[in-house]
Image 1 (spheres, one colour):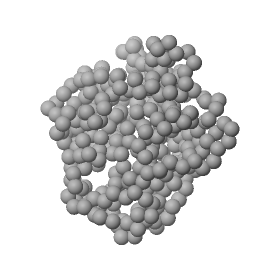
Image 2 (cartoon, rainbow, N blue to C red):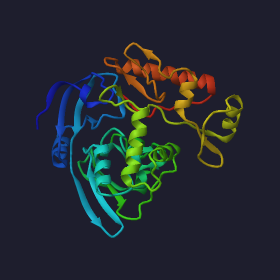
Image 3 (cartoon, one colour):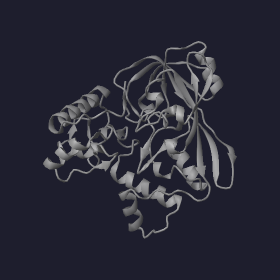
Length: 335
C-alpha cells in the first residue's frame, strides 16, 4: 500500500476546493482497509466527496474508499436483494438498476456521491428516501478492524439523518450497502408535482422506471449545476421543519410560502424559498456564491476557498433567522 505525500484533494471533492492531504492513500478492498487500520487509527475518510466542504488542509491520513462491485444475494419472483460496495458511484448504480428493471431508487437519479455515503444522511429526493430500500449496512469498526452489520432499524434513519451522523460517527467505515428492490409490480412514486409535470409534458401516462429516472434527471439538470462544471455539493441546507403555529404566523406575512405537511403539528418549509426571499439567489461574491437557478445550492466558480463558502453559509443562516425566525441547518459536513 502506497501512502502518498502532499496530495491535492481538489478532484476528490465535488466543491472543487483545493486543500492538501499531507498523507493520502486509496484502498480498493476491505482487506486492504483492515490491514491499514492495524497501523493507522487517526484517519480522514473520503469517498465521492459530495457532502463535504473542506476549509483547511488535512493533517490526518486521508483514506480514499474505492471499493467497487455489485453482487446479487438472492431473488424471487418480485424482489431482488443486492449488495453494493461503498466505492460505487451512486448515479451509475441507479442507472444500472433502471437498465435491469430493478425498481426503488429511480427517484434518486443524478444525486452526486458514492453508495457508501448514501445511508449516512439518508439521501432523498422527489418523494423518496433511500432508507425505504436499504436492508442492511456493513461497516468496519475502526477500533477493532471487525466487520459489523447494521439492520435497517439499527441505522436509526430519519430525515437526512442516521446513526452514522450521530451515535457512531467517526467509529465505523461503511464498506457496503444492501438493498431490496422490485423486479415486478413496481411501486412507482410520481406524486411529486415536478415529476408529474415533466411526464405530462412528454405525454407519458403510464411511466416506466426509465421514464421516471429520465424525468428526475431532466428536472435536476434544469435546476442544479453539474459539479464537473461548477463546484457544488448539491443542497447545502436542510429544509427546516417548524411548528404548525409558527408556519401560520409565517403565512400571514408571506401568503405564498410553500409548505409540506410533516405531521399534525409540524410543517416543512423549503429552505431554497427562504433564501431566495432573503435576496441571496444568484448573488455572486468573487469566485463563490448562490446558484442562479436554485438558492439551496452554494457554488464555487473556480478558486474559492472553503472558508469563504462557509462564511457565506453563516451569513445566510443569520439573515434567515433574523428575517423569518427560522434556524437553517447545514446539511453538508464542514471540515
